[in-house]
Image (cartoon, rainbow, N blue to C red; front, top):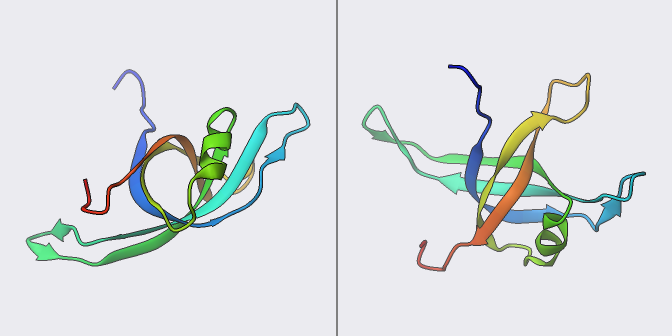
Length: 105
């Protein structure tokens, strides 16, 4: 592989969201927690998956993300990065998202 990819996609609900804050450089950021629940098939067996993941919307997308309804379900696209330079924990950086219709489409 000549170039590594870091693309993460997830259908999740916005469980918690903070208000917009700004970096010292004036870049808007919104922190949130996303809640995921699914039942994928693994080794021929249905498996219940539930987890919460920390997420950030940075820059232009933060305005649209801050207006999205809490509890709404969305298809999120972005990448994973460390929460801090020396930390081992990860945070999902949202680069785009779209609403999921009630019927799952």
